[in-house]
Image (cartoon, rainbow, N blue to C red; front, side):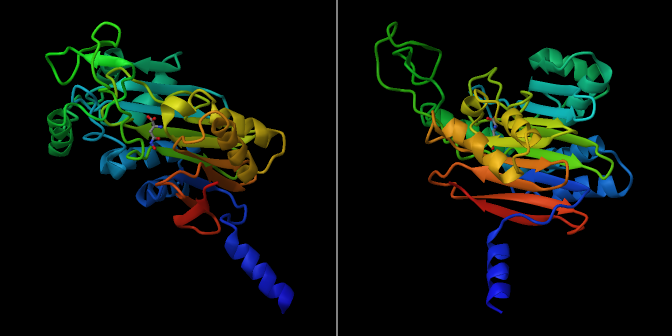
Length: 338
Ligand code: SD4
């Protein structure tokens, strides 16, 4: 009886389910995205279809205001999108960054992968590519993004992501110059890095196929032209059908310096279990940036999965979604940050 109780207690403490394939796993409690990916697999779609449809669902639903149109206006009030998709069988990648006017960023990323020899297209040229590929150009602004932007302007463009700069002394916002040019106040203050929740997704099937992807509108009040970790292969996501997949979320400016998704996949390739691989990737960043906001999900080729996050105020537990042949429906999971 004691042993039984002990096993039950230990099992309930573990955030992980049993390994089972196929598997869909994604960052944050974006349940409809998991459901869309799961149903793509169930109806015979490929792992790439699953990742694309899952992330596209979030783009349409504007998950948490952090994915898709109408969120995270930059310093000029514009919403721009970053996305990536990776085929773990062929190691092909398609990605877009600083994409304007197109809602379906993950779709454009897939078009980059399937209709060009390139890996990453950025900015205005990425939008022109998308339009030429038949994606509809629309205004990504919404009442919500206009309000966020105008409140920020009213507050003298604070907080923002500048450092060691001052605006023209006659203005409260930019243009900014290095401090030495316009000696003035400490205008720059870091923006709220906790208000962002990128979708990162991994899908694996029973035949050994694996794919991963991300989609985000980045950081609110970012400097125009800023690209985060999400469309950077190895940073936002990475997958190899022979090793596993990983996807990250959080402060991309810091996280992309460590290629956490690549690191986690390489650890799984070496036999490290997904939870430990995720933890190592977070630890590597923590060593240099103990206060960074971020989390990562990992899954290996047998369908074992795990997650890890850095414990900071506002992130003590990280929630993510899983669907596999055992659950047959999206299930909310969580892990305690460390
Ligand atoms: C970025 N990593 O652009 C993204 C934002 C994010 O959870 O993940 N938010 O930096």
